[in-house]
Length: 159
Image 1 (cartoon, rainbow, N blue to C red):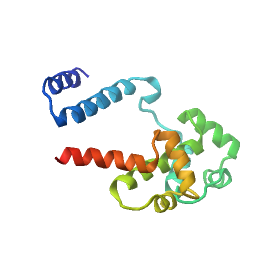
Image 2: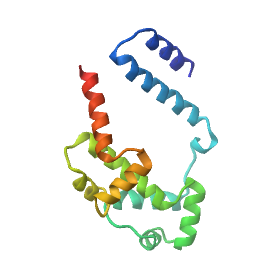
Image 3: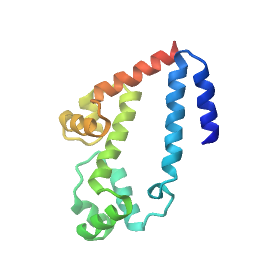
């Protein structure tokens, strides 16, 4: 943390296009370091049941997923499975699925020229409206705004 603070100080002594981008990166790193100190972010082993649920979601995120399917895969009742998942992870199975799909969508927005409908289909949303709503809820931007924002940053970095 001290090294990051020193780096932040040095970067902000100079001016230029890259100073703002570097400052943002350093601040993100500093916040990450602080968050890692919080108890809910400390490294812990997941139970085999929760690990099985995560494995199932990450293998089948492109498909419609039901609690019954996950329950059959994990050999637990859907109520017990939901309870232990929420207890260990701090959020529901469907919140995890939604976040996972959005993370994949973000990568596709940045690294491909797929349109929003194609991305929605690729990550398991029923349609682009569902992706749009979920994306805006989690990122406070539409998928199109997100793509434009990050592409503009890359273009500015390249100049």
